[in-house]
Length: 474
Image (cartoon, rainbow, N blue to C red; front, side, top):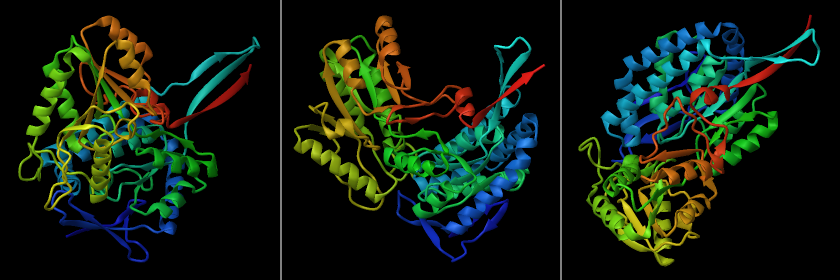
């Protein structure tokens, strides 16, 4: 069984007290690896080394930093099979999906490398006729990146690539459920010739993560996770008044109008709901369907979801894989049971499987109330709720009557409704006649409790900068 050490200042370092975490395969519950568990002092040391390295890194031209990022992308491509193998074992993904995630991570790294000549400031007119106001974009300093378990390879590069191109150094805490792929990425960092200390990757517990995030040199904290994790980060940020960019929970609504292509809507929604067992913050979780086609769409969803088999994807990649843990499965099953007790109709699924692996069947619920827990709270699993609507305004109201506002979906051929939703939906993203896929040249940002700031594109890169105004008389 493989053992991984923490990656600090381009060196592999064991925990001072020998503490480790065990990593399991959620499809088989077999041991995958052990990883060193960093103590608080080791986490603080990583921040010190990042701060020291950042002073030299920021002095490089952005073009020189871009060259390093292109080399990192090439190293990720060269190691994609090793990264993919580690990710498949620790997450339950198929080997193909896991390897493709490494390829996408290399692509997003190349994308941000190309910002090297595009990080712009501004020249602002002064009130004085003999004065210029020059607004510079500068790096934050040390950025703490907290990575989730669901797409840990892509998300890690999605955060560190824009941080690095804008002149920051990073300390990364991967999820304790999926840390092995992060350490395979650290090998790529070494292979690329990245200066020591610019990228540091450590596994740790919550107390150690708090110590890392509240280190005096940490100027920014960026997690991807749930609302509770976001609140913890906001508490951490108070210590240094650190900047926070939070990508948090979602509860994606899909509005399906009577004029929509129902076959496409059903297959898209089922794919969204069953990809990685529904463990995606933009996966469709609630469907609002116009009443004349409600029963027809429910029938299509029920037949497709019921036919979707789950199992170990290393044996059959076509199956839906497992949830990440027993605790996650228990939480989801309890939510489904409470929904049924509250009057929901269980159309398919909703049964706790036996045997090894943290599997849960695709589950469809109808006759649910807008106010019900299963509609209001993020499930983060393969559970779908369907509610009818009569008028489009009603659908918009229900879709936006929510604590979350990350992604949203609309299936219709009515351009007036498309324009209305584009102006009125309370979400950071609206997808028309397709389900979410987070284009990395866009801007992935949530409203309400779905977060602050955002990832991707120009605006995601600028999250990792701060401004300096230079007032220059002449």
